[in-house]
Image 1 (tube, rainbow, N blue to C red):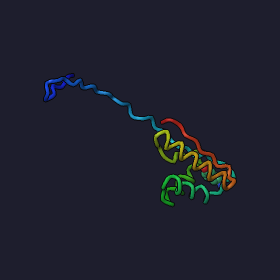
Image 2: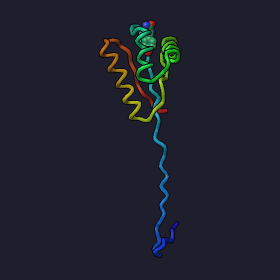
Image 3: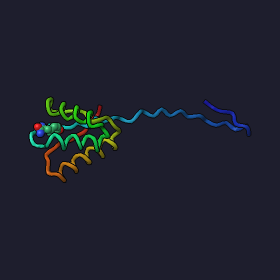
Image 4: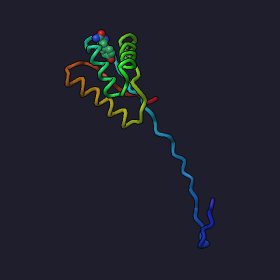
Length: 102
Ligand code: TYC
């Protein structure tokens, strides 16, 4: 497609279709040692969940072994995983968190 400009020149209009970026689920894994209260605080702090929502997600992970904390672009998901891993290490809990493309 070409666009006539006011000065008579033609401007080529190139339509570039950008694919939406891939999204990643941040997954929290259960273990037998990390205190429930700590997991709730992590979910509130890192994923901006209310205390009620964080408690629901924590209990789901506790009962089913794994749960989704949220879905983000790759960089944001990776930063959240790092925050969870850092907090867990700082408090010497074995809490594990990972990400997976949706
Ligand atoms: N299973 C842990 C306990 O009984 C609690 C827990 C929940 C740990 C969720 C990790 O991702 C987790 N203390």
